[in-house]
Structure formats: structure tokens, C-alpha cells
Length: 145
Ligand code: ZN
Image: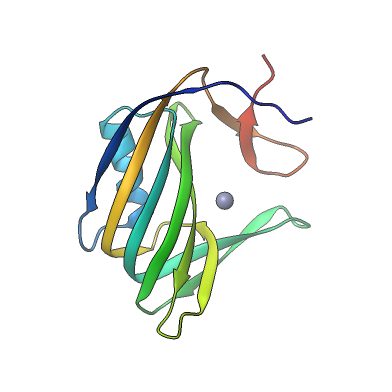
């Protein structure tokens, strides 16, 4: 069953990430430091290398692959919610190479920023907390109450 809840946009942070930072960990750190427990994130820029995940739906596990090359971040889209009582960022990226060919996937630690401009929108509303979902094996939002 699909479940949705109303949330309200309250403010937006906009800025650039440090050269050499880990893309996912840096966005997560900003959320922890600013106490952002619900929100959305978008970004663009470039990375020195990337590590992305692909979820195997049959085996219920991620496989990760490394892209050891410089790439453009043509899109980063993600959300911020709570898992294990702390803010967690779930983001997907599309990255393009020298020929404009694109790679995409679930953003994992190990993706290193060359330059990145981010926009984080803070939302207010009911708590979105991740818990184990039996059907998919993923830490999805628990929205039972
Ligand atoms: Zn994902």
C-alpha cells in the first residue's frame, strides 16, 4: 500500500562542498550539524571518482562498483530522514564522462568531491524513520501510525 504524509517546506540551505570531501558523508555531516531530520537535497558539480550501488532485488543486497575517473555530477537527488535515531541521506546520482556517457546509481561513501554545489531543503512534518522492510530487504520508511 502506498502511504503519503503532508510535509511543509521551511527553509533552504545552499552552499558548496569542500574539495576532496566524501560526497555522501559531507552532506550527511551538514544534516547532523544543522540538525536536519527531514528534507531533500539536490546537487551538481564534479567528482574525482565515484562508488555507486545497485540493489539486487532477487538477493536483497547491494552490489557496489567503482568508477576510477573524473566525472561530472549531472544530477544528485536525495532525501533526508531518520535511521537509528540520526539523520540519514539517501541519494542517487547520475554522473557523466568525457564523452557524455552517463553512469548512475545509489550514492555510496567513496565518492570524492572535485566541486559540488548543493541545495538542502528543510522540511517539517511527521517523523520519517527508516526500519527494515521484509518485502524488499531495504530500510524503508515505517509509516504505520
Ligand atoms: Zn538508493
